[in-house]
Length: 305
Image 1 (tube, rainbow, N blue to C red):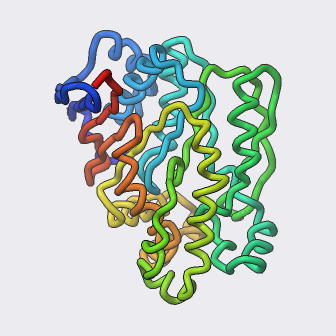
Image 2: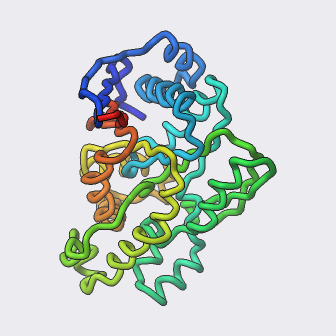
């Protein structure tokens, strides 16, 4: 990701049940050894972050970890580096992208016809095959092979499957809405953007999304042992970073600024709720600056109190 600063230190806050302290840490010798084995072309702060997480997981030993963050936050970059860092510390890790579990175009069209037309657009809760995702999280921890879906965003449809061979020590579930929780009913009364005002004036779509978060998605998240949240500076950053992502696509498949803004509005309500709630309960909150660099890392540590 362009703009990450090589010299920017990571910060650490350990609190909740223990005296809060803020310690500036660039790298321990152990971290430096892990970083040396990670893709040298990746942003230095993300390499260090991956090393720190992998080393911590050798102690806490989670089996399933969620990795959440707004569009363009760097989830895919960090997930790739985590596989390398975990290998360096003796852990075999697999990454599942929740985007690959999007329902097929036909399935979403059916959902759009039966529930609300906005469900034809991939992204919001309700457009994933949650049961398949949950089974993958379980099966990959054991021996044997398991087929996971592959989604082609260019075609906006499922492109096939990939077979992964277990067992893995750790499975990371990466996705923009991982860990998202439902909001109070009263928070759904008013639209948050023009898309909701124009296409969901009665709130049918947003109530269904909220109900899905309270049911099958909550059950999926309950199986996670730890949650890492990449906290973006705000929705303006999401729009800007998503537009930057578009520049890497073939010209005939790129969205312009207006189209990106419209697309992000499908995600806005849940993203805002996550920015308000996840820093309070995620195990790791990675605070990002506008230039995409890591400002600090807050770790929630339970204590005797």
